[in-house]
Amino acid sequence: MKQVHSEEKKQFRKLFQQENIDRFEDRFKVLQVFLETEHHVTATELHQMLRERGVDLDVNFVRETLQFMCRFGFARRNRFDNGQQRYEHLHLGQHHDHMICTKCRRIIEFRDNQLELQQSRVAESFGFLMLQHKMEIYGICADCLRQRVPLMPLSAARQGEKLVIREISGGPTARLRLLSMGLRIGDRLEVLTNNGQGQIAVAVDFTRYVLGRGMAQKLLVSPAEKGAAAVSESTATDRAAATEPPCD
Figure 1 (cartoon, rainbow, N blue to C red):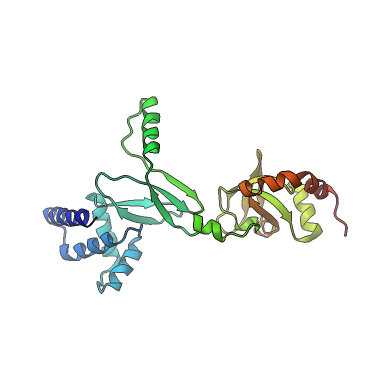
Figure 2 (tube, rainbow, N blue to C red; figure 1 turned 90 degrees about the vertical axis):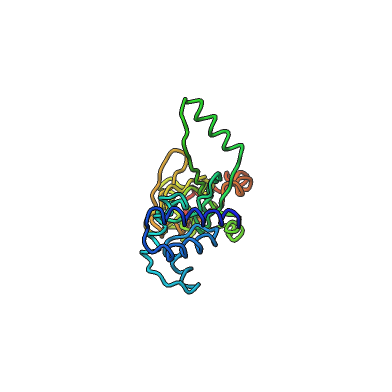
C-alpha cells in the first residue's frame, strides 16, 4: 500500500501542477493526511485530522481540494443513507462494495468475486453494457447485534428489520387500541420507516400500519429469525389471550 500511495503522490503532484491549481503545497498536505486513513471521511473530519497534525487550513479549502481529488480520480464521493458526503480512496484497478450499519454508521468494505461475475452475467442477459456499479447493503453490524437486548420496543427498531411482536405493555387501554388496529402478539412485521422521531410505519403481511412513538414503545419485539421457533410454539396461546377483552 505504501508503494501505491507513493505513486499517487507523484501523479497528484504532476496533475495538479500541470493544471496550475493554486496553493499546491497546502493541497498536497491534504492528500498526505487523506492517504493516512482507510476510513470514509467527511471534509469536516479530514479538516480536524489536519488540525491534529498541526496543519491549519480552512475547511472550505479542504472541501475544495477533495473535490479536485474526485475530479482527477484520486478520491470518490459517496452519499450513504443520511445524505452526508463522505470521501474514500480511489485506487486504480480496485473495486469494492459497502455494508452500512444503520445503528453505529460503520461502513464495511467488501469484495465478492462471485457476486461481481453474477452482476456481469445479469447485465449481459439483458444486452446491457455495464460501465460501473455500486452496491450498498444496509443492516446492523455484528458488534451492534451483540449489544442488542433480546426484547426491545418497536420504537428502537431500524428501518428494514423484520420482527415478531412478543408482548404489549402499557395496560388494558394500550392493548385494546392495538388490538382494534389489528395488531396481535405473534404477528411478524417489517419496519417500513423509522427516522428516530415521529411516526413509525410497519407492515404485517400486505397491510400497512402507522404508529406514534408512544404506542410503538408499548410493542415489544424480537428479531423474526431468532424468535421464529418460540413464536410458532406460543402464537396460538398468545393470540387467544390477546383477543380476549382485558379485565379492568
